[in-house]
Image 1 (cartoon, rainbow, N blue to C red):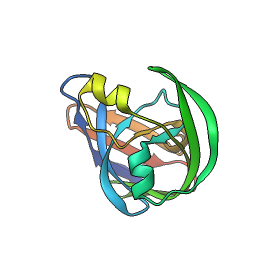
Image 2: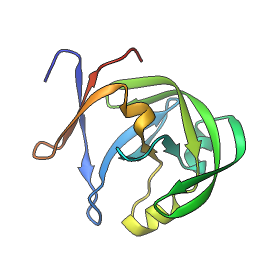
Image 3: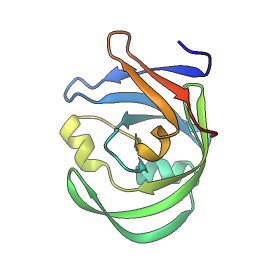
Image 4: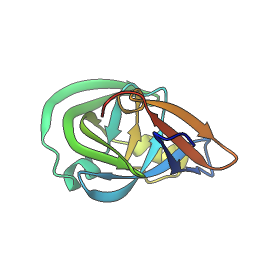
Length: 139
């Protein structure tokens, strides 16, 4: 592990090959998140957004996901903490994760996407079950 690197324990979903980490949203949680390098933006379920007290910036948007087009709202988090890594002032999409949860037989609170991951050098160590985030840019 490098000096500016954080190791975050992950679990693999039993049904689908998904990396799952635990996180706190605005200090609330923990909630389960899938790490998705193909998602352009970090996503919260409406339930998690409500629990975190998130105010919405835009409500009438559409997003395209693996499950098709979805109604989407956007907001900005004060903080998202995964392990010891905390990212502040993060833009997120709020959309239903019902299809993903049903397909993977999970109960996800969100998806960690590119707008968070791009701030780090990301290494996935499957044998040890760790996601390593090395700080590349100021958070």
